Each structure stands twice: as structure tokens, then as C-alpha cells.
Length: 116
Image: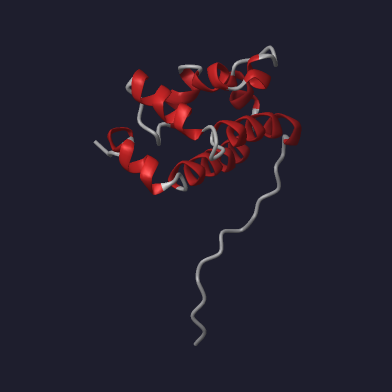
């Protein structure tokens, strides 16, 4: 019997232009050279790092990413336009990126990484 790890099937993005706007903004905000500013903003707002919907609702991304801010729509509006499978993939991308933050920064901002 073969023992292979689970591989999540890759689903095609249905609303690619909308998805790309948010994916790119998250990529810029969570880039290694910018992520500390993002974590500091979450800490100042009392938000948890894994609370993606709260991040969208409080417009943190628009405050940190000029391109998204100049798009004419809030991140939550872009997100609402996505079909549910695309929302799930974007949330997965965000959570994976948040977990991949440098361990030193994760320790420094441990408060926002705690699960309550």
C-alpha cells in the first residue's frame, strides 16, 4: 500500500481579475520588507493575525497599500465580488502567508498570533 501525503486539488480561479487585485495587494503588504508595518498595524488595532475578515472590515489593507487604496474600492468590496471558492483560496493564501512570517517577527508580535 502506497503512503502519499494529501495534496489539495488546485481549483481554477473563477473571477481572476478581482482575485488578482486582492492577491497582489496581500503579496505587497505581507512581503518580507513590509510585513512588520502590517503586524504593527494589527497590534495597534487589537486584531488577530489570522482574522482575515476583520482585517478586510477594518480597511487595514487599504491603509498600507497605495494601489489598493487607489482602486476606488475597499478590499472588503473586492472580496465580496469573489465567488465562494475564490474567497476560500484567497483566505488560504493569506493564512499561509501570515504563518510564513519570519519567526523573530512572530515572536515580537506574539500577542496577535495567540489563539484565544
